[in-house]
Image (cartoon, rainbow, N blue to C red; front, side):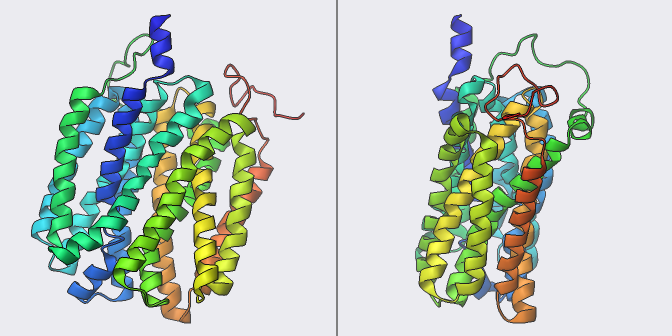
Length: 410
């Protein structure tokens, strides 16, 4: 009974995972708030800047799949520690070599691995909490997205007062310290029967995507909710400095406000999903995103509608991210790492493509209207798919599986 109680709730495991994820996202998202400074110092075009800002997302998205599988196999303590130790290397190199477009592009690509940290912490935290509390626990862990807020508030000011290398040195130092702390403090939850044996397979754990179409639906939902958050956060400083002619510091603060609302909304989304059902909450999130994206298309050149729409969209997307992973933990409790890896990869790619699309649309049409219309269209597709699912209730009993549970309300 004592072991079961410990497994139902472990604030220490949740806290150290949250701290590690926050530091990782601080380092991973740094190119967004530093984008205007990089553009000035390296004389980058708008498209080159969009590529530099988006490129860390690529490797981070791809690596979430094997990293999630490795976390299921070897546990979050070992994998998270190794990931953070690796991440120090590209940060040190960026601090030393950031004077050309090529070096920043290549090193930013390798820094993208740090973004795979999300796929480690979800199964690590999930195993320490009972199903009734997983939505809230995973939402709290997801608040590590707040690393983006810290980066937005501090990176531009640090670069301005010292040098462009200083934020990278700071991130490298924080990750080095966090690597040691996590290894010393973190412990993996006990597994019935012990950890899996035999050789590691990166294909077999993904078989769930052949068996269950709902797994693919989750990738689409996270592509919009988390990808939309990352894309808006990364591109918002450029939008504010280029269209509203704000200073870099002011734009960074406003981007931080956007990220902060999304971070706070994520655990609220998990908590609400535990109580009202994740699918119902996703309907609200997708509907709001459609309306707000169309509002941005019509009024992004004016500060008031731009501010209102961006802040409201941060809340809608944050609620959506919390709801998606409530469904991951509930529908696929035995494959959380593998499903998290693929779903997280989709969210990362959702953060990669929109900044490029926005830059291309701006270059061709001279405005961002079409880009926001496309965002509304993706949200409409998500809503259509969600409504079309033979919907299982996110609040059904834990013993029911996605294949056998009776849809709610029927």
